[in-house]
Length: 488
Ligand code: TXE
Image (cartoon, rainbow, N blue to C red; front, side, top):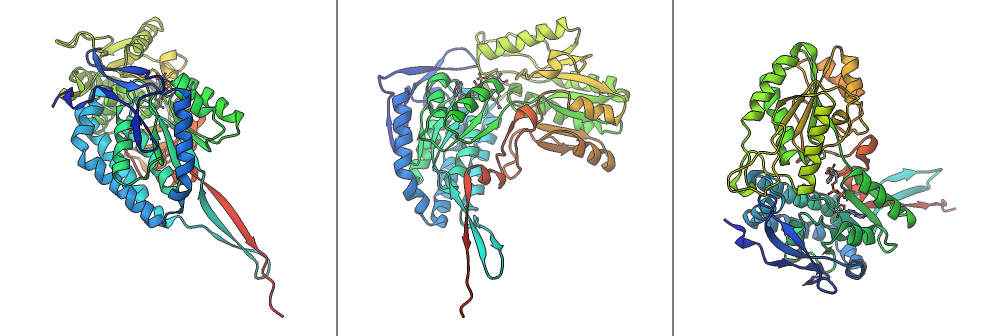
């Protein structure tokens, strides 16, 4: 299949209709494998975003008033619609982001699973009864927030869009989605699939556009009731400040510097492929990517050798040709990662594998960086503390368990930790001591994990997506108390 399946221009989706941006502005969408033009997308202006918010506001009460089972059935049909179109969606997602086709296919399947998961919960959103004095009691209801804004990044467009929109819709909210300018296509297609599946016009609106224009307008609007943001810490701060002006709640899913802790008794044959994949998946552009290895000094040399061998075997290429690893999303992102490799050399690290931008036949303009293993890293170095957002793995060593836990927490982030050991006591001790939203033992769950609560400690953000915890983000509790008088 080729890019002929991508339309020449994708428009806004507002109130069930596709239309260009006010004034007809468009944004170029680049092919990250070649730097060529993939397509164009509407560049939403503030008046477009306002129209989307108004459409959502009008549509929301009727959507929320549907019997929950019916909302659930519609969301099931969205999952079916995604699966029916999976092949096209995966190719477009792969072309748009540069990620290998099999990863794009997995993302599309996970997107369908989000709709399925929350569809099944629509008629199970129970409240509590709270006994009070005598025969008096109170009830709680979980009610929708109203109109929810969703600012989506470019690394997992269809997954993150589905992960935030599906629970919001299930509760009875109407949504306005602002995808990232670098990879906006899947969100528009998802909006169309939802409409065709029976999500009423206006309940899911998609407004591609620039962050500082469309995104900023959405985040600063007094006419929305919640913002879900996934992206970088600096932008997260700006979005929080904008939402704070109108006292709007936010969910922040920000970056990470997630460690794999390899203890002396770890099974390296099992660990090495998983640690490699936790890095190279999506070319390291994953908030939950495993970008640090903290290894017991007795296994350090062996681990570096095995990882280096594995890294050198990783195939790079155009996403739709399904290599092990595709390009980065943009020249900006590639240059940022190459800049960190210079910093690593200046900081005195040893480059044990990779270390630069390879040239690939026929893909001269592509934004490729080789999977890179940095050895001799210490926790005070920038490459050990800052999110690089590329395929760069830093290796640090420890002497005892307490030092391993301290190193794991020696960054501003706390998203995911993996622990490699066959000793259950050590695994549990570390799991309880690290400051991390998720902990995996002898595995690594970057991406996926639909039922697993996901979110950050520290500057990785706050609020929880995925699983049943996400339902709390997109709903609010109302308490109703009854003062019951006994009949004389
Ligand atoms: O992200 P931004 P960028 C991290 C990663 C990366 C860095 C910069 O470290 O290197 O962030 O990437 C929208 N008001 N992550 O600059 O800016 C923007 O249009 C409202 C981690 O591409 O955070 C897009 O839709 N919205 C990460 C979204 O914010 C604004 C995923 C994310 O873009 C805005 C991506 C504004 N003023 C980057 N400015 C993760 N957690 O997975 C931009 N946006």
